[in-house]
Image (cartoon, rainbow, N blue to C red; front, top):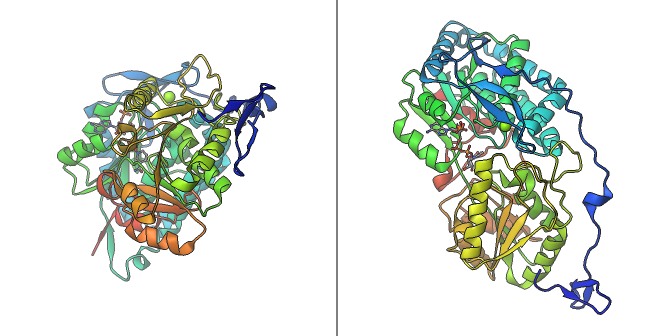
Length: 504
Ligand code: NAP
Ligand code: MG
Protein backbone atom coordinates (compact mmCIF):
# COMPACT_ATOMS: atom_id res chain seq x y z
CA UNK A 1 0.00 0.00 0.00
CA UNK A 2 1.24 3.41 -0.87
CA UNK A 3 0.03 4.74 2.51
CA UNK A 4 2.32 2.50 4.54
CA UNK A 5 4.98 4.52 6.41
CA UNK A 6 7.99 3.45 8.43
CA UNK A 7 8.63 4.74 11.97
CA UNK A 8 12.00 5.52 13.56
CA UNK A 9 12.04 2.04 15.05
CA UNK A 10 11.73 0.62 11.57
CA UNK A 11 8.35 -1.05 12.02
CA UNK A 12 5.87 -0.48 9.21
CA UNK A 13 2.90 1.70 10.23
CA UNK A 14 -0.43 1.78 8.44
CA UNK A 15 -3.42 4.12 8.92
CA UNK A 16 -5.94 2.92 11.48
CA UNK A 17 -9.70 3.38 11.26
CA UNK A 18 -9.59 6.00 14.06
CA UNK A 19 -7.29 8.24 12.04
CA UNK A 20 -4.08 7.30 13.89
CA UNK A 21 -1.59 4.72 12.69
CA UNK A 22 -0.98 1.19 13.88
CA UNK A 23 1.76 -1.39 13.20
CA UNK A 24 1.30 -3.39 9.97
CA UNK A 25 0.18 -6.96 10.49
CA UNK A 26 3.18 -9.22 10.84
CA UNK A 27 1.46 -12.56 11.26
CA UNK A 28 2.61 -14.91 8.52
CA UNK A 29 -0.01 -17.62 8.17
CA UNK A 30 2.05 -19.68 5.72
CA UNK A 31 4.92 -19.85 8.19
CA UNK A 32 2.60 -20.45 11.13
CA UNK A 33 0.96 -23.55 9.72
CA UNK A 34 2.95 -26.74 9.19
CA UNK A 35 2.20 -28.33 5.80
CA UNK A 36 -0.87 -30.58 5.93
CA UNK A 37 -0.94 -32.33 2.57
CA UNK A 38 -3.83 -34.59 1.71
CA UNK A 39 -2.52 -38.03 0.67
CA UNK A 40 -2.90 -38.62 -3.04
CA UNK A 41 -2.58 -42.41 -2.96
CA UNK A 42 -6.36 -42.74 -2.80
CA UNK A 43 -6.48 -42.13 -6.55
CA UNK A 44 -5.11 -44.43 -9.21
CA UNK A 45 -4.83 -42.76 -12.57
CA UNK A 46 -4.58 -45.13 -15.50
CA UNK A 47 -1.71 -44.35 -17.87
CA UNK A 48 -4.18 -44.15 -20.75
CA UNK A 49 -7.94 -43.82 -20.71
CA UNK A 50 -10.48 -44.04 -23.50
CA UNK A 51 -13.85 -42.40 -24.10
CA UNK A 52 -16.88 -43.74 -22.26
CA UNK A 53 -19.31 -44.82 -24.97
CA UNK A 54 -22.26 -47.19 -24.69
CA UNK A 55 -21.27 -48.20 -21.17
CA UNK A 56 -17.65 -49.07 -21.97
CA UNK A 57 -14.28 -47.38 -22.11
CA UNK A 58 -13.14 -47.38 -25.73
CA UNK A 59 -10.14 -46.09 -27.69
CA UNK A 60 -10.65 -43.21 -30.10
CA UNK A 61 -11.35 -44.32 -33.67
CA UNK A 62 -8.14 -42.71 -34.92
CA UNK A 63 -6.10 -43.92 -31.96
CA UNK A 64 -5.15 -40.36 -30.93
CA UNK A 65 -4.64 -39.27 -27.35
CA UNK A 66 -3.35 -36.29 -25.37
CA UNK A 67 -1.73 -35.72 -21.99
CA UNK A 68 -3.37 -34.10 -19.01
CA UNK A 69 -1.04 -32.51 -16.48
CA UNK A 70 -1.05 -31.34 -12.90
CA UNK A 71 -0.83 -27.54 -13.26
CA UNK A 72 0.81 -27.22 -9.83
CA UNK A 73 3.80 -29.38 -10.81
CA UNK A 74 3.58 -29.66 -14.62
CA UNK A 75 3.80 -33.45 -14.19
CA UNK A 76 1.91 -35.61 -16.64
CA UNK A 77 -0.93 -37.41 -14.87
CA UNK A 78 -1.99 -39.61 -17.77
CA UNK A 79 -3.17 -39.76 -21.35
CA UNK A 80 -6.75 -39.61 -22.50
CA UNK A 81 -8.33 -40.32 -25.87
CA UNK A 82 -8.63 -37.39 -28.27
CA UNK A 83 -12.12 -37.42 -29.71
CA UNK A 84 -12.68 -37.11 -33.44
CA UNK A 85 -15.93 -36.45 -35.31
CA UNK A 86 -16.23 -40.22 -35.68
CA UNK A 87 -16.03 -40.76 -31.91
CA UNK A 88 -18.64 -38.06 -31.34
CA UNK A 89 -20.88 -39.72 -33.91
CA UNK A 90 -20.51 -43.07 -32.21
CA UNK A 91 -21.41 -41.54 -28.84
CA UNK A 92 -24.44 -39.72 -30.26
CA UNK A 93 -25.71 -42.96 -31.85
CA UNK A 94 -25.27 -44.82 -28.53
CA UNK A 95 -27.19 -42.03 -26.75
CA UNK A 96 -29.99 -42.16 -29.35
CA UNK A 97 -30.33 -45.93 -29.05
CA UNK A 98 -30.38 -45.75 -25.24
CA UNK A 99 -32.96 -42.95 -25.38
CA UNK A 100 -35.32 -44.82 -27.68
CA UNK A 101 -34.94 -48.33 -26.33
CA UNK A 102 -34.37 -47.84 -22.60
CA UNK A 103 -34.34 -44.45 -20.90
CA UNK A 104 -37.48 -42.87 -22.34
CA UNK A 105 -39.41 -46.08 -21.60
CA UNK A 106 -38.34 -46.33 -17.98
CA UNK A 107 -40.85 -45.29 -15.28
CA UNK A 108 -39.80 -41.89 -13.90
CA UNK A 109 -39.32 -43.22 -10.37
CA UNK A 110 -36.78 -45.74 -11.74
CA UNK A 111 -34.80 -42.92 -13.34
CA UNK A 112 -34.81 -41.23 -9.95
CA UNK A 113 -33.39 -44.32 -8.30
CA UNK A 114 -30.37 -44.29 -10.61
CA UNK A 115 -29.72 -40.65 -9.74
CA UNK A 116 -29.99 -41.32 -6.01
CA UNK A 117 -27.52 -44.16 -6.47
CA UNK A 118 -25.06 -41.93 -8.35
CA UNK A 119 -25.33 -39.30 -5.63
CA UNK A 120 -24.64 -41.84 -2.90
CA UNK A 121 -21.62 -43.33 -4.67
CA UNK A 122 -20.22 -39.83 -5.20
CA UNK A 123 -20.51 -39.24 -1.48
CA UNK A 124 -18.84 -42.57 -0.72
CA UNK A 125 -15.96 -41.79 -3.10
CA UNK A 126 -15.84 -38.08 -2.22
CA UNK A 127 -12.21 -38.02 -1.09
CA UNK A 128 -11.05 -39.73 -4.25
CA UNK A 129 -12.91 -37.21 -6.39
CA UNK A 130 -11.64 -34.25 -4.37
CA UNK A 131 -8.00 -35.32 -4.66
CA UNK A 132 -8.31 -36.06 -8.37
CA UNK A 133 -10.01 -32.71 -9.02
CA UNK A 134 -7.20 -30.86 -7.25
CA UNK A 135 -4.51 -32.87 -9.05
CA UNK A 136 -5.92 -32.36 -12.53
CA UNK A 137 -7.18 -28.78 -12.19
CA UNK A 138 -4.98 -27.14 -9.53
CA UNK A 139 -7.75 -26.00 -7.17
CA UNK A 140 -7.16 -26.18 -3.40
CA UNK A 141 -8.27 -29.45 -1.81
CA UNK A 142 -10.28 -27.47 0.74
CA UNK A 143 -12.44 -26.28 -2.08
CA UNK A 144 -12.77 -29.48 -4.10
CA UNK A 145 -13.50 -31.32 -0.83
CA UNK A 146 -15.95 -28.77 0.63
CA UNK A 147 -17.52 -27.25 -2.46
CA UNK A 148 -17.15 -29.12 -5.76
CA UNK A 149 -17.75 -32.70 -4.68
CA UNK A 150 -20.52 -32.20 -2.08
CA UNK A 151 -22.37 -29.84 -4.44
CA UNK A 152 -22.06 -32.34 -7.31
CA UNK A 153 -23.55 -35.09 -5.13
CA UNK A 154 -26.24 -32.68 -3.91
CA UNK A 155 -27.16 -31.91 -7.50
CA UNK A 156 -27.79 -35.54 -8.38
CA UNK A 157 -29.72 -35.92 -5.14
CA UNK A 158 -31.87 -32.87 -5.81
CA UNK A 159 -32.79 -33.85 -9.37
CA UNK A 160 -33.36 -37.47 -8.36
CA UNK A 161 -36.24 -36.12 -6.28
CA UNK A 162 -37.76 -34.30 -9.26
CA UNK A 163 -37.72 -37.30 -11.65
CA UNK A 164 -41.20 -38.58 -10.75
CA UNK A 165 -42.70 -35.19 -9.87
CA UNK A 166 -42.37 -33.40 -13.20
CA UNK A 167 -46.16 -33.15 -13.52
CA UNK A 168 -46.09 -30.78 -10.55
CA UNK A 169 -43.25 -28.59 -11.79
CA UNK A 170 -45.18 -26.68 -14.46
CA UNK A 171 -48.60 -26.04 -12.99
CA UNK A 172 -50.30 -29.16 -14.36
CA UNK A 173 -48.94 -28.88 -17.90
CA UNK A 174 -47.58 -32.10 -19.40
CA UNK A 175 -43.93 -32.53 -20.16
CA UNK A 176 -41.80 -34.70 -22.43
CA UNK A 177 -38.03 -35.15 -22.64
CA UNK A 178 -36.20 -33.48 -25.50
CA UNK A 179 -34.11 -36.48 -26.57
CA UNK A 180 -30.31 -36.52 -26.85
CA UNK A 181 -28.34 -33.69 -25.23
CA UNK A 182 -24.81 -32.66 -26.26
CA UNK A 183 -23.16 -31.06 -23.23
CA UNK A 184 -19.89 -29.13 -23.27
CA UNK A 185 -18.24 -27.97 -20.05
CA UNK A 186 -15.22 -25.85 -18.97
CA UNK A 187 -12.29 -26.56 -16.68
CA UNK A 188 -13.09 -24.44 -13.64
CA UNK A 189 -15.52 -26.82 -11.88
CA UNK A 190 -15.09 -30.01 -13.91
CA UNK A 191 -17.10 -32.49 -11.82
CA UNK A 192 -19.62 -29.92 -10.64
CA UNK A 193 -20.32 -28.69 -14.17
CA UNK A 194 -20.76 -32.32 -15.29
CA UNK A 195 -23.30 -32.79 -12.47
CA UNK A 196 -25.09 -29.53 -13.38
CA UNK A 197 -25.49 -30.81 -16.91
CA UNK A 198 -26.15 -34.52 -16.40
CA UNK A 199 -28.45 -34.57 -13.36
CA UNK A 200 -31.36 -32.49 -14.75
CA UNK A 201 -31.02 -34.07 -18.21
CA UNK A 202 -31.25 -37.60 -16.84
CA UNK A 203 -34.01 -36.79 -14.34
CA UNK A 204 -36.16 -35.46 -17.17
CA UNK A 205 -35.61 -38.57 -19.33
CA UNK A 206 -32.94 -37.43 -21.80
CA UNK A 207 -29.70 -39.18 -22.68
CA UNK A 208 -26.37 -37.37 -22.91
CA UNK A 209 -23.03 -36.98 -24.63
CA UNK A 210 -20.67 -34.94 -22.43
CA UNK A 211 -17.43 -33.28 -23.54
CA UNK A 212 -15.17 -32.25 -20.62
CA UNK A 213 -12.51 -29.53 -21.03
CA UNK A 214 -9.13 -30.46 -22.42
CA UNK A 215 -7.19 -29.68 -19.24
CA UNK A 216 -9.53 -31.41 -16.76
CA UNK A 217 -10.93 -34.67 -18.17
CA UNK A 218 -10.09 -36.96 -15.24
CA UNK A 219 -13.01 -36.50 -12.83
CA UNK A 220 -15.48 -36.88 -15.70
CA UNK A 221 -13.87 -40.23 -16.50
CA UNK A 222 -14.00 -41.23 -12.83
CA UNK A 223 -17.66 -40.25 -12.88
CA UNK A 224 -18.06 -42.70 -15.79
CA UNK A 225 -16.81 -45.43 -13.43
CA UNK A 226 -19.44 -44.34 -10.91
CA UNK A 227 -22.11 -44.61 -13.62
CA UNK A 228 -20.96 -48.17 -14.30
CA UNK A 229 -21.01 -48.89 -10.56
CA UNK A 230 -24.58 -47.54 -10.39
CA UNK A 231 -25.55 -49.88 -13.28
CA UNK A 232 -26.78 -46.99 -15.38
CA UNK A 233 -27.93 -48.58 -18.66
CA UNK A 234 -25.25 -48.36 -21.40
CA UNK A 235 -25.49 -45.32 -23.66
CA UNK A 236 -27.54 -43.17 -21.29
CA UNK A 237 -24.41 -41.10 -20.58
CA UNK A 238 -21.45 -41.03 -22.97
CA UNK A 239 -18.28 -39.06 -22.35
CA UNK A 240 -15.97 -38.05 -25.19
CA UNK A 241 -12.70 -36.35 -24.23
CA UNK A 242 -10.84 -33.98 -26.51
CA UNK A 243 -10.12 -30.40 -27.55
CA UNK A 244 -12.25 -27.60 -28.92
CA UNK A 245 -12.77 -29.38 -32.27
CA UNK A 246 -14.30 -32.34 -30.41
CA UNK A 247 -16.70 -29.89 -28.76
CA UNK A 248 -17.42 -28.27 -32.12
CA UNK A 249 -18.21 -31.68 -33.67
CA UNK A 250 -20.63 -32.39 -30.83
CA UNK A 251 -22.27 -28.95 -30.81
CA UNK A 252 -22.96 -29.05 -34.56
CA UNK A 253 -23.96 -32.73 -34.75
CA UNK A 254 -27.24 -33.33 -36.60
CA UNK A 255 -28.23 -36.20 -34.31
CA UNK A 256 -28.64 -34.20 -31.09
CA UNK A 257 -31.77 -32.38 -29.95
CA UNK A 258 -30.20 -30.02 -27.45
CA UNK A 259 -26.87 -28.31 -26.87
CA UNK A 260 -26.01 -27.25 -23.34
CA UNK A 261 -22.80 -25.25 -23.20
CA UNK A 262 -20.86 -23.63 -20.39
CA UNK A 263 -17.76 -21.71 -21.35
CA UNK A 264 -16.59 -18.49 -22.91
CA UNK A 265 -18.89 -16.02 -24.62
CA UNK A 266 -16.79 -16.26 -27.77
CA UNK A 267 -17.22 -20.05 -28.13
CA UNK A 268 -20.87 -19.75 -27.07
CA UNK A 269 -21.56 -17.38 -29.96
CA UNK A 270 -19.84 -19.75 -32.37
CA UNK A 271 -22.00 -22.61 -31.13
CA UNK A 272 -25.11 -20.50 -31.53
CA UNK A 273 -24.24 -20.08 -35.22
CA UNK A 274 -23.39 -23.73 -35.93
CA UNK A 275 -25.78 -25.73 -33.72
CA UNK A 276 -28.46 -27.69 -35.55
CA UNK A 277 -30.27 -28.83 -32.42
CA UNK A 278 -33.73 -27.42 -31.64
CA UNK A 279 -32.77 -26.43 -28.09
CA UNK A 280 -29.80 -24.47 -26.83
CA UNK A 281 -28.74 -23.15 -23.44
CA UNK A 282 -25.59 -21.08 -22.96
CA UNK A 283 -23.91 -20.29 -19.64
CA UNK A 284 -21.15 -17.86 -20.50
CA UNK A 285 -18.82 -15.34 -18.91
CA UNK A 286 -19.30 -12.72 -16.23
CA UNK A 287 -17.86 -9.53 -14.70
CA UNK A 288 -19.66 -9.35 -11.39
CA UNK A 289 -19.78 -6.20 -9.30
CA UNK A 290 -19.38 -6.62 -5.57
CA UNK A 291 -20.96 -3.44 -4.16
CA UNK A 292 -19.88 -2.35 -0.69
CA UNK A 293 -21.84 0.36 1.13
CA UNK A 294 -20.35 2.33 4.02
CA UNK A 295 -23.01 0.99 6.41
CA UNK A 296 -22.07 -2.68 6.02
CA UNK A 297 -19.99 -4.88 8.32
CA UNK A 298 -16.67 -4.13 6.65
CA UNK A 299 -14.70 -7.11 7.95
CA UNK A 300 -17.42 -9.45 6.77
CA UNK A 301 -17.39 -7.72 3.38
CA UNK A 302 -13.62 -8.21 3.11
CA UNK A 303 -14.09 -11.96 3.60
CA UNK A 304 -16.81 -11.89 0.96
CA UNK A 305 -14.56 -10.00 -1.45
CA UNK A 306 -11.70 -12.44 -0.87
CA UNK A 307 -14.03 -15.39 -1.28
CA UNK A 308 -15.56 -13.81 -4.37
CA UNK A 309 -12.40 -13.22 -6.37
CA UNK A 310 -9.53 -15.24 -4.95
CA UNK A 311 -11.64 -18.35 -4.39
CA UNK A 312 -10.68 -20.95 -7.02
CA UNK A 313 -7.94 -18.61 -8.32
CA UNK A 314 -10.67 -16.39 -9.78
CA UNK A 315 -11.54 -19.18 -12.21
CA UNK A 316 -15.20 -18.55 -11.54
CA UNK A 317 -17.65 -17.17 -14.08
CA UNK A 318 -19.58 -15.43 -11.30
CA UNK A 319 -16.42 -14.15 -9.55
CA UNK A 320 -16.74 -10.76 -7.88
CA UNK A 321 -14.08 -9.31 -10.16
CA UNK A 322 -15.18 -5.66 -9.82
CA UNK A 323 -15.29 -4.10 -6.37
CA UNK A 324 -17.51 -1.02 -6.16
CA UNK A 325 -16.93 0.61 -2.81
CA UNK A 326 -18.65 3.67 -1.35
CA UNK A 327 -16.07 6.42 -1.47
CA UNK A 328 -16.22 7.30 2.23
CA UNK A 329 -14.96 3.84 3.27
CA UNK A 330 -12.61 3.22 0.36
CA UNK A 331 -9.35 3.72 2.27
CA UNK A 332 -10.45 1.72 5.31
CA UNK A 333 -11.70 -1.13 3.17
CA UNK A 334 -8.57 -1.20 1.03
CA UNK A 335 -6.38 -1.33 4.12
CA UNK A 336 -8.33 -4.31 5.41
CA UNK A 337 -8.15 -5.99 2.00
CA UNK A 338 -4.42 -5.35 1.81
CA UNK A 339 -3.90 -6.91 5.25
CA UNK A 340 -6.03 -9.88 4.27
CA UNK A 341 -4.39 -10.74 0.97
CA UNK A 342 -0.97 -10.75 2.61
CA UNK A 343 -2.22 -13.63 4.78
CA UNK A 344 -3.52 -15.77 1.91
CA UNK A 345 -1.53 -18.95 1.37
CA UNK A 346 -0.74 -19.64 -2.28
CA UNK A 347 0.72 -23.03 -3.07
CA UNK A 348 0.30 -26.80 -3.10
CA UNK A 349 -3.37 -27.47 -3.96
CA UNK A 350 -3.28 -30.68 -1.94
CA UNK A 351 -2.24 -28.86 1.24
CA UNK A 352 -5.28 -28.33 3.45
CA UNK A 353 -3.97 -24.90 4.52
CA UNK A 354 -3.84 -23.59 0.96
CA UNK A 355 -6.19 -20.74 0.08
CA UNK A 356 -5.18 -20.25 -3.55
CA UNK A 357 -4.02 -23.07 -5.78
CA UNK A 358 -2.47 -23.22 -9.24
CA UNK A 359 -3.74 -21.47 -12.34
CA UNK A 360 -5.37 -24.12 -14.49
CA UNK A 361 -3.04 -23.97 -17.48
CA UNK A 362 -0.04 -22.21 -18.93
CA UNK A 363 -2.22 -20.48 -21.51
CA UNK A 364 -4.67 -19.22 -18.84
CA UNK A 365 -1.72 -17.85 -16.86
CA UNK A 366 -0.49 -16.04 -19.97
CA UNK A 367 -3.98 -14.55 -20.43
CA UNK A 368 -4.05 -13.32 -16.83
CA UNK A 369 -0.56 -11.83 -17.17
CA UNK A 370 -1.65 -9.95 -20.29
CA UNK A 371 -4.46 -8.41 -18.24
CA UNK A 372 -2.09 -7.45 -15.42
CA UNK A 373 0.00 -5.67 -18.02
CA UNK A 374 -3.11 -4.04 -19.51
CA UNK A 375 -4.13 -2.74 -16.07
CA UNK A 376 -0.73 -1.14 -15.56
CA UNK A 377 -0.75 0.31 -19.10
CA UNK A 378 -4.19 1.80 -18.46
CA UNK A 379 -2.71 3.70 -15.50
CA UNK A 380 -4.25 1.64 -12.67
CA UNK A 381 -2.26 1.05 -9.49
CA UNK A 382 -1.36 -2.62 -8.97
CA UNK A 383 -1.18 -4.27 -5.52
CA UNK A 384 -0.17 -7.89 -5.07
CA UNK A 385 0.54 -10.37 -2.33
CA UNK A 386 4.25 -10.34 -1.55
CA UNK A 387 4.35 -14.09 -0.97
CA UNK A 388 6.92 -16.09 -2.91
CA UNK A 389 5.26 -18.28 -5.49
CA UNK A 390 6.34 -21.87 -6.18
CA UNK A 391 8.90 -22.21 -8.98
CA UNK A 392 7.30 -25.04 -10.91
CA UNK A 393 3.73 -24.91 -12.13
CA UNK A 394 1.45 -22.00 -13.02
CA UNK A 395 0.86 -19.37 -10.32
CA UNK A 396 -0.54 -15.90 -9.96
CA UNK A 397 -0.33 -13.82 -6.79
CA UNK A 398 -3.67 -12.46 -5.57
CA UNK A 399 -3.89 -8.99 -7.09
CA UNK A 400 -6.07 -5.90 -6.89
CA UNK A 401 -5.97 -2.69 -8.85
CA UNK A 402 -7.01 0.69 -7.46
CA UNK A 403 -7.64 3.86 -9.45
CA UNK A 404 -9.46 1.86 -12.11
CA UNK A 405 -11.47 3.72 -14.77
CA UNK A 406 -14.77 2.30 -15.99
CA UNK A 407 -13.34 2.11 -19.48
CA UNK A 408 -10.24 0.15 -18.50
CA UNK A 409 -9.96 -3.35 -19.97
CA UNK A 410 -9.58 -4.84 -16.50
CA UNK A 411 -12.94 -3.28 -15.55
CA UNK A 412 -14.74 -4.47 -18.66
CA UNK A 413 -13.30 -7.83 -19.75
CA UNK A 414 -13.45 -11.16 -17.99
CA UNK A 415 -9.98 -12.05 -16.70
CA UNK A 416 -10.76 -15.41 -15.10
CA UNK A 417 -7.93 -15.06 -12.61
CA UNK A 418 -7.34 -13.75 -9.04
CA UNK A 419 -7.46 -10.11 -10.14
CA UNK A 420 -9.80 -7.51 -8.66
CA UNK A 421 -10.59 -4.08 -10.13
CA UNK A 422 -11.53 -1.56 -7.42
CA UNK A 423 -13.73 1.44 -8.21
CA UNK A 424 -15.76 3.85 -6.07
CA UNK A 425 -19.27 5.34 -6.02
CA UNK A 426 -21.10 8.00 -3.99
CA UNK A 427 -24.80 7.16 -4.40
CA UNK A 428 -26.79 3.93 -4.86
CA UNK A 429 -27.80 5.16 -8.34
CA UNK A 430 -24.17 5.52 -9.33
CA UNK A 431 -23.43 2.03 -7.98
CA UNK A 432 -26.26 0.54 -10.06
CA UNK A 433 -25.16 2.36 -13.17
CA UNK A 434 -21.59 1.21 -12.78
CA UNK A 435 -22.57 -2.35 -11.86
CA UNK A 436 -24.72 -2.60 -15.00
CA UNK A 437 -22.05 -1.01 -17.19
CA UNK A 438 -20.75 -4.26 -18.69
CA UNK A 439 -21.73 -6.56 -21.52
CA UNK A 440 -22.19 -9.33 -18.95
CA UNK A 441 -24.90 -9.93 -16.36
CA UNK A 442 -24.28 -13.14 -14.50
CA UNK A 443 -23.96 -12.22 -10.83
CA UNK A 444 -23.39 -9.43 -8.31
CA UNK A 445 -23.03 -8.84 -4.57
CA UNK A 446 -24.41 -6.14 -2.26
CA UNK A 447 -23.03 -5.40 1.20
CA UNK A 448 -25.17 -3.17 3.39
CA UNK A 449 -26.86 -3.06 6.76
CA UNK A 450 -30.14 -1.93 5.18
CA UNK A 451 -32.56 -4.51 3.81
CA UNK A 452 -34.48 -1.80 1.96
CA UNK A 453 -31.33 -0.81 0.09
CA UNK A 454 -30.78 -4.41 -0.96
CA UNK A 455 -34.28 -4.67 -2.47
CA UNK A 456 -34.03 -1.31 -4.17
CA UNK A 457 -30.71 -2.27 -5.76
CA UNK A 458 -31.95 -5.74 -6.70
CA UNK A 459 -34.85 -4.44 -8.71
CA UNK A 460 -32.53 -2.44 -10.95
CA UNK A 461 -29.57 -4.73 -11.35
CA UNK A 462 -29.15 -6.69 -14.56
CA UNK A 463 -27.61 -9.82 -13.08
CA UNK A 464 -28.97 -13.36 -12.89
CA UNK A 465 -27.82 -13.98 -9.31
CA UNK A 466 -27.38 -11.29 -6.65
CA UNK A 467 -25.96 -12.20 -3.25
CA UNK A 468 -26.60 -9.95 -0.28
CA UNK A 469 -24.03 -9.81 2.54
CA UNK A 470 -22.46 -12.99 1.21
CA UNK A 471 -20.93 -14.19 -2.04
CA UNK A 472 -20.55 -17.35 -4.12
CA UNK A 473 -23.14 -19.39 -2.31
CA UNK A 474 -24.73 -22.22 -4.27
CA UNK A 475 -27.57 -24.60 -3.76
CA UNK A 476 -29.04 -27.10 -6.23
CA UNK A 477 -32.52 -25.70 -5.59
CA UNK A 478 -31.49 -22.22 -6.69
CA UNK A 479 -31.44 -21.33 -10.40
CA UNK A 480 -28.28 -19.90 -11.94
CA UNK A 481 -27.80 -18.10 -15.24
CA UNK A 482 -27.21 -14.78 -16.88
CA UNK A 483 -28.51 -11.64 -18.55
CA UNK A 484 -27.03 -10.12 -21.72
CA UNK A 485 -23.82 -11.77 -22.98
CA UNK A 486 -23.64 -14.06 -19.96
CA UNK A 487 -25.95 -16.39 -21.86
CA UNK A 488 -29.48 -17.66 -21.59
CA UNK A 489 -31.37 -20.46 -19.92
CA UNK A 490 -31.12 -21.37 -16.25
CA UNK A 491 -29.42 -24.28 -14.52
CA UNK A 492 -30.43 -25.50 -11.07
CA UNK A 493 -33.77 -25.57 -9.30
CA UNK A 494 -37.09 -26.18 -11.01
CA UNK A 495 -35.98 -23.69 -13.70
CA UNK A 496 -33.20 -26.13 -14.64
CA UNK A 497 -35.80 -28.77 -15.51
CA UNK A 498 -37.32 -26.59 -18.22
CA UNK A 499 -34.06 -26.61 -20.14
CA UNK A 500 -34.46 -30.35 -20.77
CA UNK A 501 -38.20 -30.64 -21.34
CA UNK A 502 -40.83 -29.86 -23.93
CA UNK A 503 -43.58 -28.30 -21.84
CA UNK A 504 -46.98 -28.69 -23.51
P1 NAP B 1 -14.09 -22.26 -23.59
O1 NAP B 1 -12.80 -22.09 -24.26
O2 NAP B 1 -15.28 -21.65 -24.18
O3 NAP B 1 -14.28 -23.82 -23.40
C1 NAP B 1 -15.41 -24.41 -22.81
C2 NAP B 1 -15.61 -25.79 -23.39
O4 NAP B 1 -15.90 -25.67 -24.79
C3 NAP B 1 -14.39 -26.70 -23.30
O5 NAP B 1 -14.82 -28.02 -23.13
C4 NAP B 1 -13.76 -26.50 -24.65
O6 NAP B 1 -12.95 -27.57 -25.04
C5 NAP B 1 -14.99 -26.42 -25.54
N1 NAP B 1 -14.77 -25.77 -26.81
C6 NAP B 1 -13.74 -24.98 -27.21
N2 NAP B 1 -13.94 -24.56 -28.47
C7 NAP B 1 -15.12 -25.08 -28.89
C8 NAP B 1 -15.89 -24.99 -30.09
N3 NAP B 1 -15.48 -24.29 -31.13
N4 NAP B 1 -17.07 -25.64 -30.14
C9 NAP B 1 -17.53 -26.35 -29.09
N5 NAP B 1 -16.84 -26.48 -27.94
C10 NAP B 1 -15.65 -25.85 -27.83
O7 NAP B 1 -14.05 -21.71 -22.11
P2 NAP B 1 -12.98 -22.04 -21.03
O8 NAP B 1 -11.86 -21.09 -21.25
O9 NAP B 1 -12.70 -23.48 -20.96
O10 NAP B 1 -13.80 -21.68 -19.72
C11 NAP B 1 -13.82 -20.43 -19.17
C12 NAP B 1 -15.09 -19.69 -19.56
O11 NAP B 1 -16.23 -20.38 -19.10
C13 NAP B 1 -15.17 -18.35 -18.92
O12 NAP B 1 -15.51 -17.37 -19.87
C14 NAP B 1 -16.26 -18.49 -17.89
O13 NAP B 1 -16.94 -17.34 -17.56
C15 NAP B 1 -17.14 -19.50 -18.50
N6 NAP B 1 -17.91 -20.20 -17.48
C16 NAP B 1 -19.23 -19.90 -17.35
C17 NAP B 1 -20.00 -20.54 -16.39
C18 NAP B 1 -21.46 -20.22 -16.25
O14 NAP B 1 -22.16 -20.96 -15.61
N7 NAP B 1 -21.94 -19.15 -16.81
C19 NAP B 1 -19.43 -21.50 -15.57
C20 NAP B 1 -18.08 -21.79 -15.72
C21 NAP B 1 -17.33 -21.14 -16.70
P3 NAP B 1 -11.37 -27.52 -24.74
O15 NAP B 1 -11.18 -27.34 -23.29
O16 NAP B 1 -10.92 -28.85 -25.16
O17 NAP B 1 -10.85 -26.37 -25.55
MG1 MG C 1 -5.01 -31.21 -16.02
